Length: 306
Image (cartoon, rainbow, N blue to C red; front, top):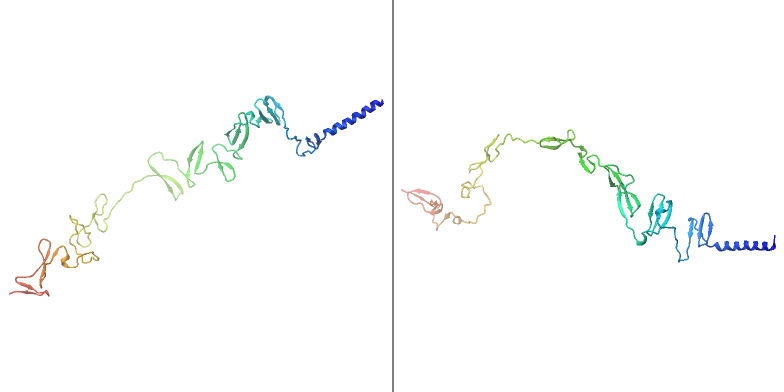
């Protein structure tokens, strides 16, 4: 081989080694991990990028993200609306708000799922219950999560219409077709039933103590048994006063009179020995002496005068 050619080959090999050594701090491969900008690799990352503090990452740019074939995990920057999109292999989902810096979302309910949507795509789907409710079921919180349950036993519901089928776990009978009936519980049979309303009948009313006029079997009048005789009920007269009765057994009657002359119907002038009280016919009792054929002394002894 020409000595000059050998010398050129050695120089080329040395230059290649120097070039690879220069690249080593910014590009390292080991165990399928790549580190750029750092000699250290991240074993849990396929690609590790380290900037100098004033650098960023530019991902693939497309004028319209819909023109890019979808693949699971793919991301792209749409220069048309200024948004970053990610793909799940089926749809594109916006990851940023674009040039405006914000994006509007709507929350809707679809069956058992809450859907968070932006202007074009469903961003997130959250199921309400682990098992979707079927027709006529509703969601009930069991203390841990929402579960689908159905109304049963005494109350059922169909398409929002609630029906009462029983009371206290006892089925209700069918409604009566006519008449006025009451719902009653028959403890003997242990069931509810409808019964026609009925009217009661009084066959006889007997007059008890203090009443007169009985017994009554159809129509009649009961009266209070009034009078001043034994076992009668005293009734005030037309002037609102008690009739003349024996009040000797009455006790604790209030009175301001301390003498006979203090009574309203007694007028006593200066009495003398042997006088008596005599009604003057006008409702007043007055004291006067006895004269004529009979004389009375102060001990009540009367003497017939001759």
